[in-house]
Amino acid sequence: MINLNSGQNGKAIEYFTKAHELSRDVSERERLYIEGHYYGQVLGDLDKAIETLQVATQEYPLQMEDYVNLSALYAYKGDVEKARELILKAVALRPDDAVALADTIGIYTWADQYDEARKYVLRANQLQRDITSMLQYEMALDGATGDEAAIRKKLAKGAGRPDQFLLTWQWGSIQVAWGQFREATATLNQAAEQARLVKAADAEAMFLLGAADARWPIGECQDPEGAAKRALALDRSKMTQIGIATTLAFCGNRKLALPALDALEKKYPEDTLVQQLVIPQARGVLELQTGDAAKALALLQQSESFDAVSPGSYLRGLAYLKLHDADNAIASFKIGTRYKGTTYLNQSSLSFPLNNYALSMLGLARAYAMAGDKVQAKKAYVSFFAEWKNADADLPVLAAAKKEYAAL
Image (tube, rainbow, N blue to C red):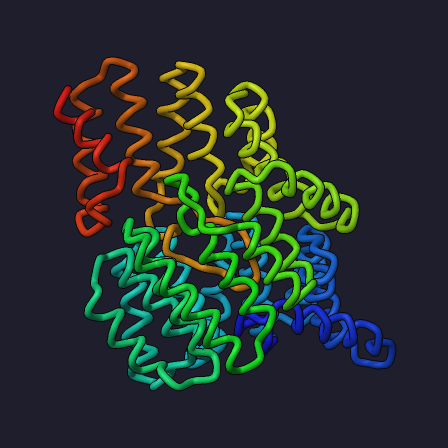
């Protein structure tokens, strides 16, 4: 669990596998706990993991950790309501637990319930619970509300910790969401260097890939093929393989991405996220990049259930725009703008791009303009400009949006 929570997914999977191999003589409670992680992290079978931990909560209703872990599984599936219900049960059982409090802050931030999130920040501060994941979720809340000063205070507070790379990574992801791509690339490379210094090779690999594909939404990836080679030299765990395949796909390297995706599909047949999210969405992106919007849409529709934890609805919106289907584009982009908070929430157990709220809002503006609804289009453009008020000034996409707005 320590490795999992600190972004070292390869090591976490290694230890979960070992624990499962040695679980023959443990108690039933321990067995269910181990199996929940084995199914969820090693095999990636989310339904089986959920089923196992549901049994655990029924048999051992006072075991707080099972509610925390079950909540995380529902979060991976994008079910914010169920995740919130379960994490609140965990907090009720142990109101002073740092992990439960941190996850509660994260889930309320995800659902844009910032005042509720702040209540748990206050409780955590009163209890002096400042574990790194707590600071990370608090930074996500600050990112969603635009409080850079608060973010920098948390970065300073976490400086020197062995896992400070998680906070640096969080800051880089916030900069991406704010349209500050130049600074984000440097920040994510800094996170990789911090991980290297503490020999967290799997985390280093993830951050190198993140630095390479941070600019994929604006079509300006930074040497994705080189980053993929460096990542693979560092680590060959499942999360790194997923990260490599998705980086290559989202950055448009069809020649290398397709065999990488084929290998993932074959190697992890039971993995829910690989089969139902990563493969169809990455392949859909590749088709969208080649101009086959209809084929892209058919693939992207296979991952709709994961819209809350991926850019799926945004990508479908782009496909509908290419097909000149304004109504469905509007519907898709609205899904991408339902929750702003999810844009700021990194999950160290997932190696996949998040939705970008601001760009979904820009897509919504363009879709309304295509439909001839100038009033709603103007509102969406204004919202986009507000989100990217401190973005890199020379972004072509920002210049294009300003011209489009002026022409309405």
